[in-house]
Each structure stands twice: as structure tokens, then as C-alpha cells.
Length: 227
Image (cartoon, rainbow, N blue to C red; front, side, top):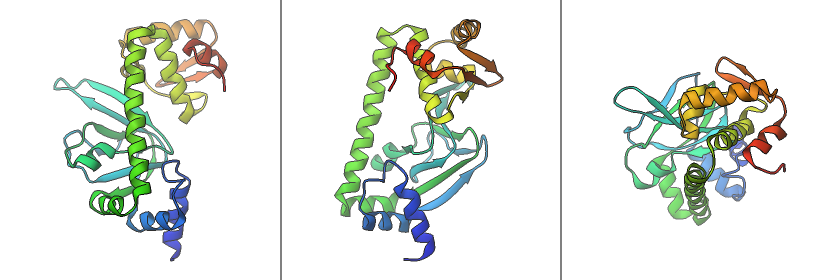
């Protein structure tokens, strides 16, 4: 195995989606992988684009969202290191269902669709990983629907901030518009709640970012027990 292939296989093994695969399977995947880099705010693809493959994030953050005919943007998800995306269009061969844009410098591993589908047919363990990924996406959708129905806006906002903190740490880089889209409320509601939490000393606000003083406070507001 050449050094480039070993390097890519090591990168794959560090990704939770690929980590459980056998070394020989990782080597096969490494053989079809390509490394890509995006600059801040650079688009990876847009809704309606043809599917070209599956992406795994090594470093950085990707905003998944869409824009309506009036130019209003809606953030559907923010993905970070270790996340895999593009699986829907990869499997059904139809166009992309959302935009994917880098929020900062991003390093990716790209698996071309045609080669990856051939690998899926030969390696059931990889197919199982994709099925588990799709199930996780569905569970996330169901969970968000339940939150929207049963939880107040401030609890949902705290949960979105806590999720983002998994990638960012205590300094979360997200605009109030993005937080509003992720939470399913208006920007005014987000601003009002953040100002209340700022007054209570829970967080500090900056331009397009916020700093959490104590994650346990956010977990309490999110009604989630500390690990």
C-alpha cells in the first residue's frame, strides 16, 4: 500500500462512520476517496444539483440549508468533524435536497457515487453503516418534530446551542438567524431569549457568536442531564 493510501485510510478510521470497518474495507474505500478543501462561505453544492457522492467532514463546519424564492435562507442543520452527509442523493440518484456551504475552512473526504455504490454492493458492512446513518437522520427529524410540538421555544433554543457546542466548544459561532432556523422560531424570539440569558450571566453575546459560561447551565435550560 502506498503512503497516500495509508494516509487516507488513517483519516477514514478516525471518522465514527467508518471506524468500525475492517482494515481491508477501509483500504478499499481509501482507494476511491478524494480529499477536498473549502474556504469560509464557499458552497459545496446547492439544492437541485445532481448527486456526485458522499462527504465526510474531517475539520470545520458545514451549513445544510435552503433558500426560498424571496432569498430567505433557512438553516436545517450544522455538521462538524466526524459527520457524514449526502447519503440521500447518493442512494436514490436524485438531485440534492438542500444547499451545503462551508461556515469556515473545511477539510472533507469525498467518495464518488458510482464507485461507492459498487463498493456497497460488494461490502454489506458498509451498506449497514449507511442504513444506520439514514435511521439516525430519521430519528433526528422525529425528535425535532416532538420538540416543536411539546417543548417551549427557550428549551428548543438551548438544545440547539448545546448541539452546536459539541463542535464549537463554549464559543459557538452561529448567527441569530441561523439559531432561529434551527429552532423553528423567529429571530426576534431568539434575540429576546439570548438577551435574557445574557442578563442572567449564562452567556456572552458577540457578532455572529456567543460564549457559554457554563455548559451545565445550558443543559439545565435544555432539560438534558449532564453526562
